[in-house]
Length: 132
Image (cartoon, rainbow, N blue to C red):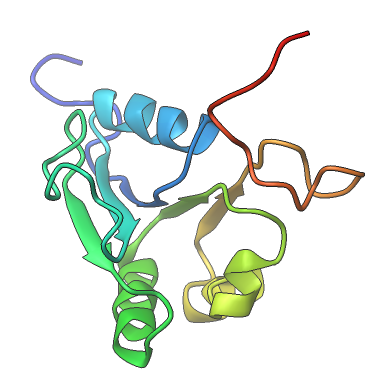
């Protein structure tokens, strides 16, 4: 396939987090997908500069206007990637049920550092770990 990317028509919305979600989004962007990274309001440390081919949009998901913006992005997307703790997206009104009601053809990718169930499922993944 010369001159065209394998995933050129794929639209992905990445809700920024840590770990495997951003890595998956990076790989999709590298393969040519149109990936938009949604950062939490006032969390972008570098002023919203693109991250390896992924433009960024800072959105406050706790406000009505921020939620409306996110839902409009989801309606136009093919894929959503999120890696928050279990229940976070549901509390925001952006869980799989809500997003699939807005966009039935959507692929909703969810991954967390500790899984969806179990003793550490609700624990945030931290970047500092004590090895002992």
